Amino acid sequence: MTNVADRVTRFASDLVDDAAAEGERENRSARQQLEHWARIGREVSSQRAVARRRVEAALRGRTPLAELSPEEGVVFNAETAAALEESLATGNHLSERTAQGRTTVFLDDLGRVVKNLPDGTQIVL
Image 1 (tube, rainbow, N blue to C red):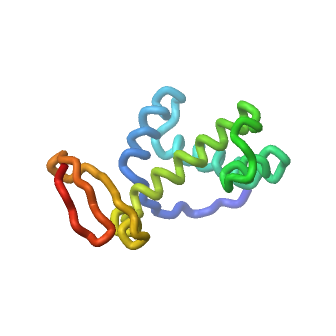
Image 2: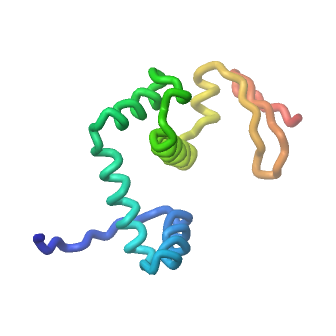
């Protein structure tokens, strides 16, 4: 195995906290746990077996979830959770939905329920 220099990478603090907690249970440092999860994710992502293709089809809505095996369901749920977390962290869903002409209801910074209309008007409910 060749010796490769480490690279500096930033992770979301909640992910590092989770890695530290899980790593402690598994006798790994937070870094070791993140590397472990990355390797598992790499293997799952690179898997081209029938099961992986079935999960990918389900993620695209082409295969009903009920047709997935329990193991495939675990991978489907993990992929969905990761995509949702990334979307919530990086997306501006309010402006996207407004641009699509959709009404959106959300909680503002004060905890109030607000209705956002397609024209950008906001009504506190």
